[in-house]
Image (cartoon, rainbow, N blue to C red; front, side, top):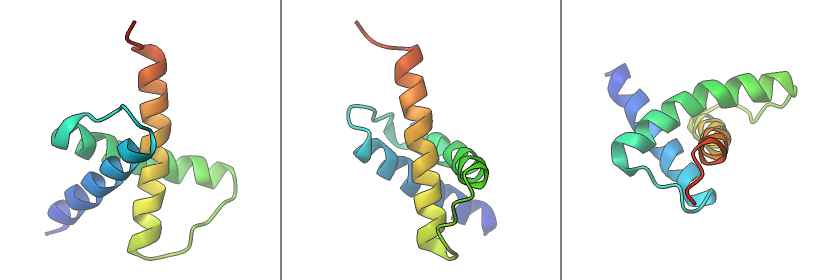
Length: 82
């Protein structure tokens, strides 16, 4: 059950990140991967900045979305289409 919740949260975070950082849709599987990795990146980044979004589902999804935006930014910076 936990893996399903993790995949759903990752998908939501990745989808939200791709909406905010426009032009970076990677499809469902890509959004799930970016969202899950974004959760780790967002948790690490916000921890370094001493920022807390609180507790609960919304804060977990927002943290993942922030990390997903960072990942999408770096991805587009490295693999910029010309």
